[in-house]
Image (cartoon, rainbow, N blue to C red; front, top):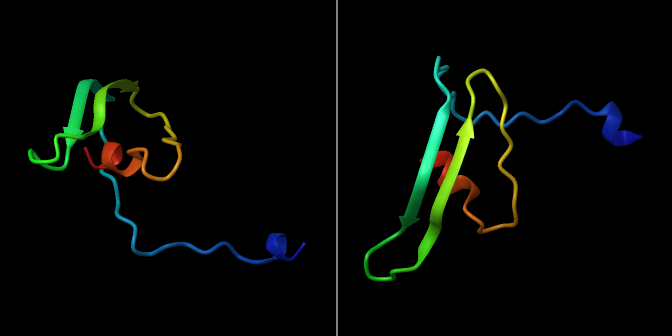
Amino acid sequence: MDAIENAPYIDSDGRDVPLTEHGIELRGVSFSYGRESGAKVLSDVSCDIPEKTTCAIVGPSGSGKTTIANL
């Protein structure tokens, strides 16, 4: 019951995301952190996020969620 009665913590270090009148589209995106390693963090990723919608990117630690968001 304590969790329900406590006010939520809001991380003030977050950044604002600008509003857009267009959706977000990724087609066949691959990404790696350097030429030497050759290991792709993302390989052939495609997705569509329509305008004025909410999208959740979920997965285990190290699966590329932050990398996708930064792209």
